[in-house]
Image (cartoon, rainbow over all chains, first blue to last red; front, side, top):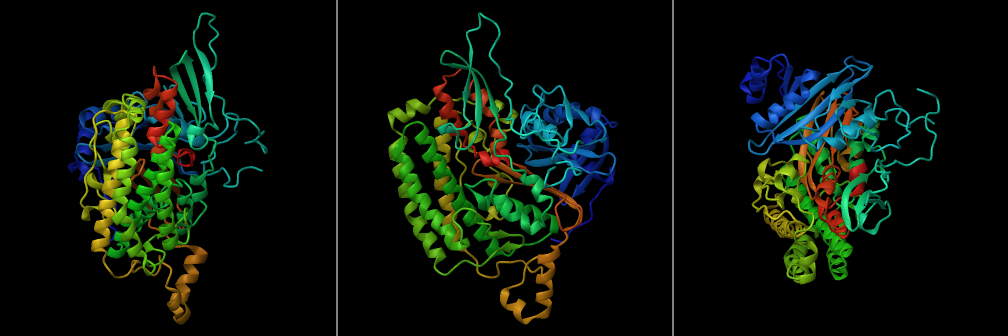
Length: 163
Length: 410
């Protein structure tokens, strides 16, 4: 299966129900979309992420949040991409939401009210990347000791750690 | 960033602390990190009222080794042995998930024989993982005999893995683009022998437990989980199927060749420890069914894809052909570059949905590897399962979600 180039044109991707319904719901929230290797990613403007998740869960049958993680694009700006992998049991379909955050003070609304499963994931991102989640019930370090300085998965943190 | 940021010596401090209210009936109890039922280092902080659990907080991170960070400093092919070490009960399933993700990034097609061998070994791993789960979780609840029976069969399986990969546990047998080596002579007969007798062995375990009144009393209506709670909390695998959600990635979103195999997905409605037990035992029977189909239809042919820039050449070619030697040298010293992009590959591990999110920036090292480990997510179910229930049932609940702490902490 040879690779085909990614489709990033929003108009072209409107045939996908997830894209078109999100556009119809709030076109200001959708900043872009990408279809690469048969996987759909939608870029969401950061203030709208919790509402978008509520919408996809309740209106689009994406009932299951399978994964939540973050990628550090240092030294690019916006530096962080928080990545949500959603799954629809009834449609047997996956999709990916992406939120871009600036590097100086990355803050995002927590989606624990939508899926309580996000609790540990958001704590992990807070711990390892330093992204804060507003409205999280217990935002504290989960992997590293509480008094750890620095965020190990950031790209400017050395692989060997500070010695 | 200060020069020496780590002051050393402190563990995670749990949030639960004893209530300052003098009229409060509750007390805070620490369970773990070296508790026999935790199968690793899990610490639970329980708030209890007499014998009842009011609240529970898992405290994890004791086994955090930073595998995700390490991956970013390795070539793509060097990540495979790291994936073994995430979950020591099913290393090949971890290998499979990672290599499938990278193969999708590369757009690589795998020969049929490699696909079938992978499925067969993955199902054998599912059985051996379930055997450890069955043995240890029964042991936690005082049924010692089952443990000995299960480890007897697990030993057979470990020898099978050793035969095929040279290692009993950290197998690293799957490679990007295929398998490390072809199957050794006599291997399929050995698997056939195991497969032909294994169902009787499952009958033996079931004789010991399924209708055992003590086992039933200890597990029925214990640690209940509803389907709604399970989905909201991200549960997957047998834990979710025991709550009535008919969802198995092998059947519903087939990957890595599973569309060629016929099997049933056991589902139970009760959502208690007993239902999870029944689901997993039935899964072992279904897995052996898949193994038998794989043995029957095992194709012959190459075990590696035809991609000389990605896959190490055969030893013989390397010694006789200049070109093969150059490729070998380049792959070993500078790795191979992977086209930029990102892939989320999810597979059904014995514990639930295991996902690898791999981001490539076009170089020879992954830009980011994230593991969605089912144990990490399923651990969040404990509070829901144990709230308001007896403290003795916490042990049954931990056993029933089948967590591997290495996978929780990564």
